[in-house]
Length: 307
Ligand code: P6P
Image (cartoon, rainbow, N blue to C red; front, side, top):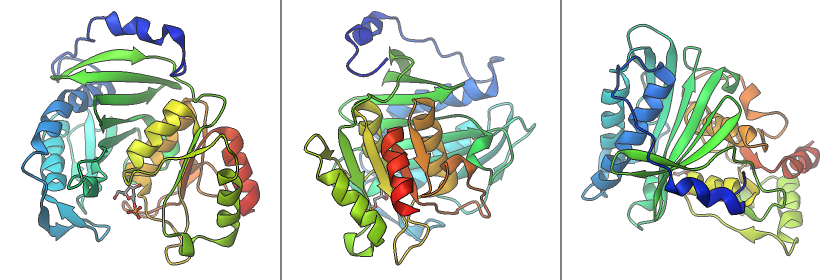
Protein backbone atom coordinates (compact mmCIF):
# COMPACT_ATOMS: atom_id res chain seq x y z
CA UNK A 1 0.00 0.00 0.00
CA UNK A 2 1.52 3.36 -0.96
CA UNK A 3 1.01 6.63 0.83
CA UNK A 4 -1.52 7.75 -1.80
CA UNK A 5 -3.71 4.64 -1.54
CA UNK A 6 -7.34 5.79 -0.85
CA UNK A 7 -7.78 2.89 1.57
CA UNK A 8 -4.73 3.86 3.61
CA UNK A 9 -6.83 5.74 6.19
CA UNK A 10 -9.08 2.79 6.80
CA UNK A 11 -6.67 1.49 9.44
CA UNK A 12 -6.69 4.76 11.35
CA UNK A 13 -9.87 3.68 13.13
CA UNK A 14 -8.23 0.48 14.35
CA UNK A 15 -7.52 0.13 18.06
CA UNK A 16 -3.87 0.62 19.01
CA UNK A 17 -1.87 -2.62 18.87
CA UNK A 18 -1.58 -3.82 22.49
CA UNK A 19 2.13 -4.08 23.37
CA UNK A 20 2.68 -6.92 25.88
CA UNK A 21 5.02 -6.08 28.75
CA UNK A 22 8.71 -7.02 28.15
CA UNK A 23 9.56 -10.57 29.18
CA UNK A 24 6.02 -11.68 28.49
CA UNK A 25 7.12 -14.60 26.33
CA UNK A 26 7.12 -12.36 23.25
CA UNK A 27 9.83 -13.27 20.80
CA UNK A 28 12.89 -11.07 21.40
CA UNK A 29 12.53 -9.24 18.07
CA UNK A 30 8.98 -8.12 18.83
CA UNK A 31 9.98 -7.38 22.40
CA UNK A 32 12.78 -5.07 21.25
CA UNK A 33 10.51 -3.27 18.79
CA UNK A 34 7.71 -2.90 21.34
CA UNK A 35 10.18 -1.51 23.89
CA UNK A 36 11.59 1.05 21.44
CA UNK A 37 8.09 2.08 20.33
CA UNK A 38 6.95 2.41 23.93
CA UNK A 39 10.00 4.57 24.74
CA UNK A 40 9.45 7.02 21.89
CA UNK A 41 7.09 9.35 23.74
CA UNK A 42 9.50 9.53 26.69
CA UNK A 43 12.47 10.18 24.40
CA UNK A 44 10.55 12.90 22.58
CA UNK A 45 9.62 14.57 25.87
CA UNK A 46 13.14 14.08 27.21
CA UNK A 47 14.61 16.20 24.41
CA UNK A 48 13.27 19.25 26.22
CA UNK A 49 16.04 20.63 28.42
CA UNK A 50 18.73 18.44 26.82
CA UNK A 51 19.51 20.58 23.77
CA UNK A 52 23.03 21.45 24.86
CA UNK A 53 26.35 19.81 24.05
CA UNK A 54 27.86 17.09 26.23
CA UNK A 55 31.57 17.25 27.00
CA UNK A 56 32.20 14.03 25.09
CA UNK A 57 32.67 12.85 21.51
CA UNK A 58 31.10 9.70 20.07
CA UNK A 59 33.34 6.97 18.54
CA UNK A 60 32.97 8.73 15.18
CA UNK A 61 34.59 11.85 16.63
CA UNK A 62 31.38 13.92 16.68
CA UNK A 63 30.57 16.11 19.68
CA UNK A 64 27.62 14.53 21.48
CA UNK A 65 24.46 16.36 22.45
CA UNK A 66 23.22 15.86 26.01
CA UNK A 67 20.18 14.16 24.45
CA UNK A 68 22.40 11.67 22.55
CA UNK A 69 23.92 10.41 25.78
CA UNK A 70 20.64 10.36 27.66
CA UNK A 71 18.67 8.52 24.93
CA UNK A 72 21.48 5.98 24.55
CA UNK A 73 21.51 5.23 28.28
CA UNK A 74 17.71 4.92 28.36
CA UNK A 75 17.63 2.46 25.43
CA UNK A 76 20.67 0.50 26.64
CA UNK A 77 19.06 0.00 30.03
CA UNK A 78 15.74 -1.19 28.60
CA UNK A 79 16.96 -3.27 25.66
CA UNK A 80 19.67 -5.16 27.56
CA UNK A 81 17.02 -6.29 30.07
CA UNK A 82 15.08 -8.14 27.36
CA UNK A 83 15.46 -11.95 27.33
CA UNK A 84 17.26 -13.03 24.18
CA UNK A 85 19.14 -9.78 23.53
CA UNK A 86 22.75 -10.90 23.28
CA UNK A 87 24.31 -7.51 22.47
CA UNK A 88 23.43 -3.81 22.54
CA UNK A 89 25.59 -1.56 20.37
CA UNK A 90 25.17 2.14 19.77
CA UNK A 91 26.59 4.86 17.58
CA UNK A 92 27.19 6.74 20.83
CA UNK A 93 29.38 4.19 22.61
CA UNK A 94 32.65 2.59 21.58
CA UNK A 95 32.05 -0.76 23.25
CA UNK A 96 29.28 -3.32 22.87
CA UNK A 97 27.21 -4.23 25.94
CA UNK A 98 26.96 -8.03 26.11
CA UNK A 99 23.62 -9.45 27.24
CA UNK A 100 22.61 -12.83 28.50
CA UNK A 101 21.41 -15.66 26.27
CA UNK A 102 22.16 -14.72 22.71
CA UNK A 103 19.34 -14.78 20.14
CA UNK A 104 19.38 -11.26 18.67
CA UNK A 105 21.92 -8.45 18.50
CA UNK A 106 20.67 -4.87 18.55
CA UNK A 107 22.36 -1.86 16.94
CA UNK A 108 20.89 1.59 17.61
CA UNK A 109 21.42 5.17 16.56
CA UNK A 110 19.60 6.61 19.57
CA UNK A 111 19.15 10.08 18.10
CA UNK A 112 19.88 10.53 14.42
CA UNK A 113 20.29 14.17 13.51
CA UNK A 114 20.77 15.53 17.03
CA UNK A 115 22.32 18.62 15.45
CA UNK A 116 18.72 19.42 14.43
CA UNK A 117 17.76 19.67 18.08
CA UNK A 118 18.87 23.28 18.48
CA UNK A 119 16.91 24.30 15.37
CA UNK A 120 13.91 22.12 16.35
CA UNK A 121 13.93 20.13 13.12
CA UNK A 122 13.15 16.46 12.49
CA UNK A 123 15.17 13.76 14.25
CA UNK A 124 14.84 10.04 14.74
CA UNK A 125 15.85 6.82 16.45
CA UNK A 126 17.17 4.10 14.11
CA UNK A 127 17.42 0.41 15.03
CA UNK A 128 18.64 -2.80 13.45
CA UNK A 129 18.05 -6.26 14.90
CA UNK A 130 20.63 -8.80 13.71
CA UNK A 131 20.78 -12.59 14.11
CA UNK A 132 24.60 -12.61 14.21
CA UNK A 133 27.00 -11.01 16.71
CA UNK A 134 28.10 -7.46 15.84
CA UNK A 135 29.63 -6.14 13.73
CA UNK A 136 27.55 -8.03 11.16
CA UNK A 137 26.63 -7.56 7.50
CA UNK A 138 23.16 -6.29 6.68
CA UNK A 139 22.26 -9.72 5.35
CA UNK A 140 22.16 -10.77 9.03
CA UNK A 141 19.33 -8.35 9.81
CA UNK A 142 15.97 -9.89 10.74
CA UNK A 143 14.21 -6.57 11.34
CA UNK A 144 14.90 -2.84 11.27
CA UNK A 145 13.14 0.46 11.52
CA UNK A 146 13.07 3.99 12.71
CA UNK A 147 11.12 6.33 14.94
CA UNK A 148 10.59 9.77 13.42
CA UNK A 149 10.11 12.72 15.78
CA UNK A 150 8.21 14.97 13.38
CA UNK A 151 4.92 16.83 13.79
CA UNK A 152 3.66 13.34 14.66
CA UNK A 153 5.78 10.57 16.17
CA UNK A 154 5.74 7.66 13.73
CA UNK A 155 7.57 4.35 13.38
CA UNK A 156 8.46 2.58 10.15
CA UNK A 157 9.24 -1.09 10.72
CA UNK A 158 10.41 -3.85 8.37
CA UNK A 159 10.31 -7.57 9.03
CA UNK A 160 9.90 -10.59 6.76
CA UNK A 161 9.94 -8.44 3.62
CA UNK A 162 7.07 -6.23 4.73
CA UNK A 163 7.03 -2.59 5.88
CA UNK A 164 4.48 -1.20 8.34
CA UNK A 165 4.03 2.38 9.51
CA UNK A 166 2.64 3.21 12.97
CA UNK A 167 1.59 6.38 14.76
CA UNK A 168 2.91 6.44 18.31
CA UNK A 169 1.06 8.23 21.10
CA UNK A 170 1.73 7.90 24.80
CA UNK A 171 3.45 4.54 24.58
CA UNK A 172 0.82 3.01 22.27
CA UNK A 173 1.26 2.29 18.58
CA UNK A 174 -1.47 2.27 15.92
CA UNK A 175 -1.02 0.82 12.45
CA UNK A 176 -1.59 3.49 9.83
CA UNK A 177 -0.14 1.81 6.73
CA UNK A 178 0.76 -1.80 5.92
CA UNK A 179 2.61 -3.53 3.08
CA UNK A 180 4.16 -0.16 2.20
CA UNK A 181 6.02 0.11 -1.10
CA UNK A 182 7.84 3.07 -2.61
CA UNK A 183 5.60 4.94 -5.09
CA UNK A 184 6.47 4.08 -8.68
CA UNK A 185 7.11 7.70 -9.69
CA UNK A 186 10.07 9.12 -7.71
CA UNK A 187 9.54 12.64 -6.41
CA UNK A 188 12.23 13.70 -3.92
CA UNK A 189 16.02 13.72 -3.85
CA UNK A 190 18.52 14.65 -1.15
CA UNK A 191 22.32 14.37 -1.32
CA UNK A 192 24.70 14.93 1.60
CA UNK A 193 28.29 16.06 1.75
CA UNK A 194 29.86 19.26 0.39
CA UNK A 195 29.37 19.54 -3.38
CA UNK A 196 33.06 20.42 -4.04
CA UNK A 197 33.97 17.09 -2.42
CA UNK A 198 31.63 14.99 -4.57
CA UNK A 199 33.32 12.74 -7.11
CA UNK A 200 32.79 13.93 -10.68
CA UNK A 201 30.72 10.89 -11.68
CA UNK A 202 28.39 11.43 -8.72
CA UNK A 203 28.06 15.13 -9.48
CA UNK A 204 27.12 14.35 -13.09
CA UNK A 205 24.45 11.91 -11.84
CA UNK A 206 23.06 14.52 -9.45
CA UNK A 207 22.81 17.12 -12.22
CA UNK A 208 20.78 14.60 -14.25
CA UNK A 209 18.41 14.02 -11.32
CA UNK A 210 18.09 17.77 -10.70
CA UNK A 211 17.30 18.42 -14.37
CA UNK A 212 14.09 16.36 -14.13
CA UNK A 213 11.22 18.86 -13.51
CA UNK A 214 9.28 16.13 -11.69
CA UNK A 215 11.91 15.90 -8.93
CA UNK A 216 12.12 18.09 -5.79
CA UNK A 217 15.05 18.71 -3.42
CA UNK A 218 14.44 17.53 0.12
CA UNK A 219 17.46 17.60 2.48
CA UNK A 220 16.85 18.27 6.16
CA UNK A 221 20.12 17.46 7.92
CA UNK A 222 18.77 14.33 9.60
CA UNK A 223 19.02 11.37 7.27
CA UNK A 224 16.00 9.66 8.80
CA UNK A 225 13.70 12.54 7.91
CA UNK A 226 15.01 12.54 4.35
CA UNK A 227 14.78 8.75 4.01
CA UNK A 228 11.23 8.82 5.35
CA UNK A 229 10.36 11.27 2.56
CA UNK A 230 11.79 8.77 0.05
CA UNK A 231 9.69 5.99 1.61
CA UNK A 232 6.58 8.19 1.44
CA UNK A 233 6.97 9.92 -1.94
CA UNK A 234 9.59 7.89 -3.80
CA UNK A 235 12.97 9.21 -4.87
CA UNK A 236 16.56 8.91 -3.69
CA UNK A 237 18.65 9.84 -0.66
CA UNK A 238 22.42 9.54 -0.65
CA UNK A 239 25.35 10.43 1.52
CA UNK A 240 28.03 9.43 -0.97
CA UNK A 241 31.74 8.71 -0.92
CA UNK A 242 33.57 12.05 -0.85
CA UNK A 243 37.04 12.99 -2.05
CA UNK A 244 38.02 13.85 1.54
CA UNK A 245 36.00 10.98 3.08
CA UNK A 246 36.10 7.88 0.83
CA UNK A 247 33.61 5.95 3.00
CA UNK A 248 31.20 8.87 3.32
CA UNK A 249 29.81 9.79 6.74
CA UNK A 250 27.06 7.40 7.77
CA UNK A 251 27.65 4.37 9.97
CA UNK A 252 27.09 0.92 8.48
CA UNK A 253 25.78 -0.94 11.55
CA UNK A 254 23.56 1.77 13.01
CA UNK A 255 22.32 3.77 9.98
CA UNK A 256 23.12 2.29 6.55
CA UNK A 257 22.14 -1.34 7.16
CA UNK A 258 18.81 -0.68 8.97
CA UNK A 259 17.77 1.88 6.35
CA UNK A 260 18.83 -0.29 3.42
CA UNK A 261 16.96 -3.29 4.87
CA UNK A 262 13.73 -1.32 5.19
CA UNK A 263 13.92 0.41 1.81
CA UNK A 264 14.65 -2.93 0.08
CA UNK A 265 11.70 -4.49 1.95
CA UNK A 266 9.58 -1.66 0.48
CA UNK A 267 10.63 -2.63 -3.05
CA UNK A 268 13.44 -0.10 -3.39
CA UNK A 269 17.18 -0.61 -3.66
CA UNK A 270 20.26 0.31 -1.68
CA UNK A 271 23.86 0.63 -2.79
CA UNK A 272 27.32 1.51 -1.52
CA UNK A 273 28.02 2.56 -5.09
CA UNK A 274 28.40 -0.91 -6.55
CA UNK A 275 26.40 -3.41 -4.50
CA UNK A 276 23.56 -3.63 -2.00
CA UNK A 277 24.56 -2.07 1.32
CA UNK A 278 23.45 -5.33 2.95
CA UNK A 279 26.36 -7.15 1.25
CA UNK A 280 29.03 -4.84 2.72
CA UNK A 281 31.31 -6.84 5.02
CA UNK A 282 32.10 -4.84 8.19
CA UNK A 283 35.59 -4.77 9.67
CA UNK A 284 34.81 -2.57 12.65
CA UNK A 285 31.70 -1.76 14.68
CA UNK A 286 31.87 1.90 13.69
CA UNK A 287 32.65 1.44 10.00
CA UNK A 288 31.21 4.08 7.70
CA UNK A 289 29.76 3.33 4.24
CA UNK A 290 28.59 5.44 1.29
CA UNK A 291 24.78 5.19 1.38
CA UNK A 292 22.40 5.49 -1.57
CA UNK A 293 18.77 4.36 -1.19
CA UNK A 294 15.56 4.83 -3.15
CA UNK A 295 13.63 3.69 -6.19
CA UNK A 296 15.34 0.77 -7.89
CA UNK A 297 15.66 2.45 -11.29
CA UNK A 298 17.38 5.48 -9.73
CA UNK A 299 19.85 3.28 -7.86
CA UNK A 300 20.49 1.16 -10.96
CA UNK A 301 21.29 4.35 -12.88
CA UNK A 302 23.55 5.54 -10.07
CA UNK A 303 25.59 2.33 -10.13
CA UNK A 304 25.91 2.62 -13.92
CA UNK A 305 27.09 6.23 -13.49
CA UNK A 306 29.72 5.30 -10.88
CA UNK A 307 30.93 2.16 -12.71
P1 P6P B 1 25.87 17.00 7.05
C1 P6P B 1 23.27 13.59 11.26
O1 P6P B 1 24.39 14.04 12.00
C2 P6P B 1 23.81 12.70 10.16
O2 P6P B 1 24.51 11.63 10.70
C3 P6P B 1 22.66 12.23 9.29
O3 P6P B 1 21.47 12.07 9.97
C4 P6P B 1 22.54 13.33 8.26
O4 P6P B 1 22.02 12.86 7.03
C5 P6P B 1 23.99 13.78 8.11
O5 P6P B 1 24.65 13.48 9.32
C6 P6P B 1 24.08 15.25 7.82
O6 P6P B 1 25.42 15.51 7.54
O7 P6P B 1 27.27 16.78 6.54
O8 P6P B 1 24.90 17.41 5.97
O9 P6P B 1 25.77 17.86 8.27
